[in-house]
Amino acid sequence: MGGAILFLILLTLYFVPTIMAWQRKQDNIIQIFIVNLLLGWSFIGWIVALVWAYKPNDKQRNQTEVR
Image (cartoon, rainbow, N blue to C red):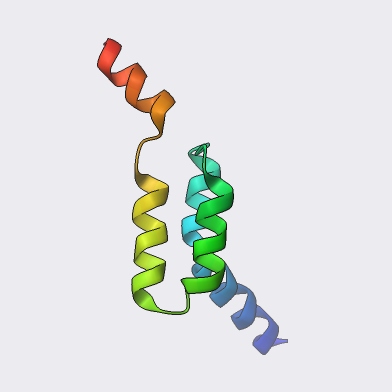
């Protein structure tokens, strides 16, 4: 039982970039998910996916420029 909970916690931490991209409604969430899935095991790939998830997409960028 404890192993399953630990697995779920680690799996959630692994996919934090994808979760953040989904919450921020990123246009390229599929690409972020693929990078996260395939390269997230390396810390650099995980960081790249995380930065990409926080990068404002075109819709967000246009809204900030109008204001």
